[in-house]
Length: 198
Image (cartoon, rainbow, N blue to C red; front, side):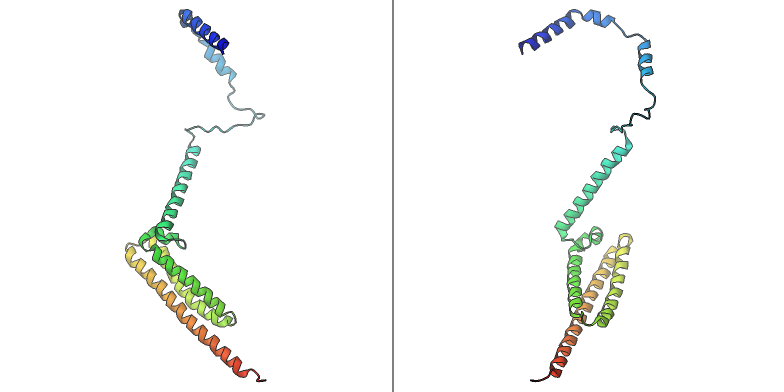
């Protein structure tokens, strides 16, 4: 360590003693011309071009901005999910966040009732086809209302219409379940009446 500090001290002393001599030497005017001549104008075909990531490169700036925007969007959706319990329909949550939890609850109930209808109607595909046609009609109306939500001048009225549509879907599914349960009970009773007595 002592040797490196000695060299440093000697260098500093040399620079200090010869400072005037350093200031008098100026580079020749042709020096820059010779340096520019040695720099190739375009990269040759044999050397691969390297993409430099410079702060003034607009492509690089857009990628960073897109990443930040994507992160903020995902964070906002996560916030909505935590705040309002939105897991099924983030589009409605963005346009009507105050109703997002209610929409989510209806959607969960509708999915559960549809699954139950599918389970109960597995022996009667014709009956299930009739039921699903009625429900698909209400569902297409709901999707139309949902697509109009972003550009609606009176969002409150449109949201109320969407909620009413979801209520109609739940009511329809309840009625279909009652019909299926009665039909299955009647079929079981009919089969048990025809069973041979031993």
